[in-house]
Amino acid sequence: MIGGGVIGCAVAERLSFEGHQVTLFERDQLGGRASGAAAGELSPHGTTSAAEESAKKSLQLFPELIARIEKDSAMNVEYRVQAGLQPAFNQEEAARLRAFGGRWLDAQACRQVEPSLTTDVLGAVLLEHANLTPPRFVLALARAAAARGAAILEGTPVMGFERMGDEIKGVITPAGSHDADWAVIAAGPWSREVASTAGADVDVRPQRGQLAALDPGAVVLRHSIFWASGYLVPKADGTIIAGGTEEESRFDDRPTVAGIASLLSLACRLVPDLGAANLQRVWAGLRPVTGDGLPIVEALGARNLIVATGHHRKGILLAPLAAMQVAAIIGAA
Image (cartoon, rainbow, N blue to C red; front, top):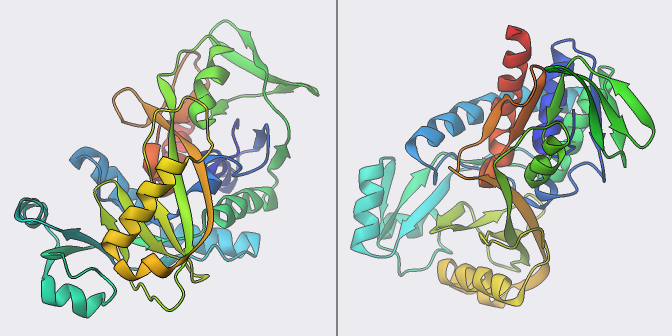
């Protein structure tokens, strides 16, 4: 297993649960990139209709998965089911949301369920939604896998592969070669670089997403709020996470003044009282995005080489499904 983000750790957890012997290689630390930078919102909405079906299926896998990994890892990932709101500011947005389905709330009902929401909205759709704390989730997945015998090797980059014909025989690290019946690459936007050493071309690139944590003071936000490409997510520790930009920045994961300013503007438009909030911290991560916008979970380049990447903004949400898909490919061989 190559990559210690949420997809890699979810695959390792699933395969170890099914009785496979797993070794996970992470060049830095677990959840050190986009997975650890994510807000942790688990909403299947905001995707294409085809992708939304996969997202809904994956969302349904969470209760069982959370129960299993919290038991096996002795950790609390702060998972909670919490409805979300997607507001409309004009008639065009309202018509689109009404056609989309879900429970429609008029302006008065919006203020009743979410008093902090701006009075400028015409209404909102109530969304199926949950959230968790991504660094805890990633670590719990890895610890659960380790509790079943998986080896989790941080600070261990994979430099290449030993190959014989159409089959990967091992992976090469600075410490030497490790035999492998299967190799799974889940290195986010770095998957292309890793796969190229096995002769496979993966159509994935990085896209920067910036976030900001707000200390809202006396402001209470009861729901996650989604509008345009941004969101506000209230967390268990009392903070509110504002996210997330979509920028072509190559591999530059530094937050910018313009990016954070856009998030603060979004926060104030959706919840005007957040203008008095304290800015706690800002950060950014690099999401993996493919040419067609759809995730890649398939055997590529060799009979026993699987690539699992390109989950874009929905990596946390789609991790359980991706893990099951990888396990199914191995199980069917």
